[in-house]
Image 1 (cartoon, helix red, strand yellow):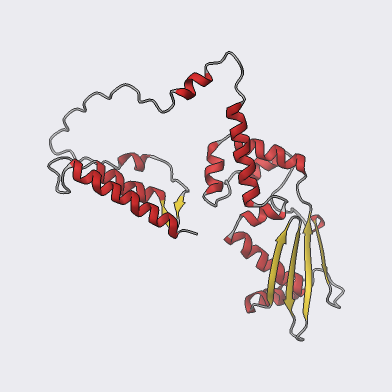
Image 2 (image 1 turned 90 degrees about the vertical axis):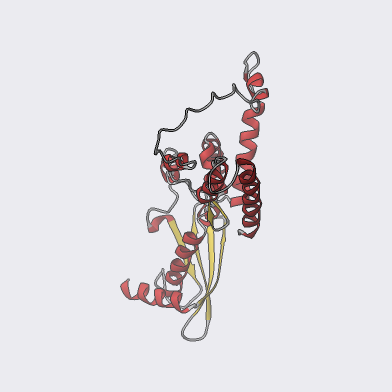
Amino acid sequence: MGTTFSVGRRYARAGNVRSLTISSSIVTALVLDEDGETYRGRIATKAFSAADWARIERALSKEARYAAQLLAGHLPDDLDQLLQGYGLSLFPQSLTELVMDCDCPGWQKPCRHLTAACYVLAEEFDSDPFTILAWRGKGRDELLEELRSHRVSDVGHVAPGTDEPRRQAGFWTAGPRVTARHEPLPGAIAKPDALLDQLDQLRLTVGRFEVTDLLRDVYRTLGCGENDEGGTVGSNRGRAQGNAAVTAERRCDGP
């Protein structure tokens, strides 16, 4: 089928796929042929059942990092491994898991129109990974709402006799005051943002900006001493508040 895929790839690059709609289990594409006719192709796979999604959502809600990555527009790297634990796979593993049809007169399936749709579909998955989940039966907004519901439910259902409510009540209470820091050794260079260098890379963004880069500016500003070239602690805190305002503006500029 090398020729068919070659023509389909050429159609995709030339923009012959005029529209591509992704819904639960079905992808519908309108593809313009060289003869001037537009044909409709459909690519279907089995959506996860409601019971499967319930298990997936419970597993995702147990770890805050999953919700953070999903809110940032990223699929967790180990999502497919999580699905394998339930006998599922994010992507179809063979053509037998797909049903394809096209209203063109050609007898071979997939035809050049369907292969063109597959190439464009792959590009959609790259640009918005949540379309893969939508194809499997759960859109981004619906999934995130379900995760929020699970986390709220987990917090609300606390076994009687435990001290969980007491711990939650004091969550925002400051702990003991930190002892005064020792004077630095002569010639030592202070790096207020050194903590960020010790962390694993955060896959979080605010618009087009990395969260780590935004935090680094704030750490450096708040870490300036009274005699630093950057100014006093008070003035630097004022600039830090300005940085927070800039961050808010950047967040509004984001998609």
